[in-house]
Length: 346
Image (cartoon, rainbow, N blue to C red; front, side, top):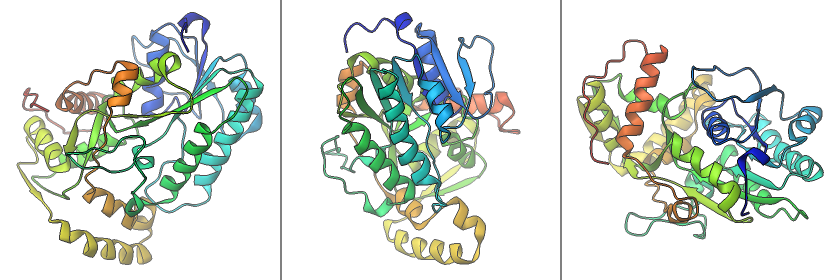
């Protein structure tokens, strides 16, 4: 959609109080877009943050959706139900039904561009020699879950939307790493690694992407994204062992990293399933699919997004350091020490 002048393009960002949505909202505002951020509670604001029109609301409430899209020319839909545990009914309500309702409201309000923040789990898994792209047949049944199923359904709905004016596309991020991960999401894994002297990790891995770069991808998709297409936005692939070693160089821990053999996946799935039947906390925070995901070598190509949005990816170690430094500075990681300024080479 050539000719997007930021000042003339107000954008609604749903989920703007979250990690990815917050970075997207601030990136758009810095570029000059009037930004309305739909949030459930006021987010923390730091010195130097650009102005965002924060609107308190619930994506499941029709009136809140209607007011949120009014006067907007674009919507970035980053809100989602995200859980590693079982579905309690919210997965479909938030990820599918609320997305459908938001599309209807956006169409009625005259919105011209709808960008859906999806997930790599809607794309296939390739190999190091042949990474999967956006057209590869889906093959991730080992990590099938309520979250995965509802995100796949919602993404297909967005890409197939046949509105008269509304152009829809999807961005599928890798593991987003960077500062201001308040919940935390990916930073939680990094901090867990930094708390143990010996890290014993599965043999899987995932492409990572810097939080600032994923925000750029969303902003640039308003102009250069092609409706009806999805874009895997990924940087360098890191195994979990490589990730732990980078954390160890920066935080001093872990001092030793060991990788579990792939043969451990089956027994660990069975053990997790058995524990989940008797321990509520296990059921709430994970599933056997999470175990399989940790062994999955998720090789995905980001060449389409890189070319369309002009993305340049920093070394993953720089993004990891930024995440750890922010967690320490904010007080979310008391006791964390960063003992090495080395950046690694990935």
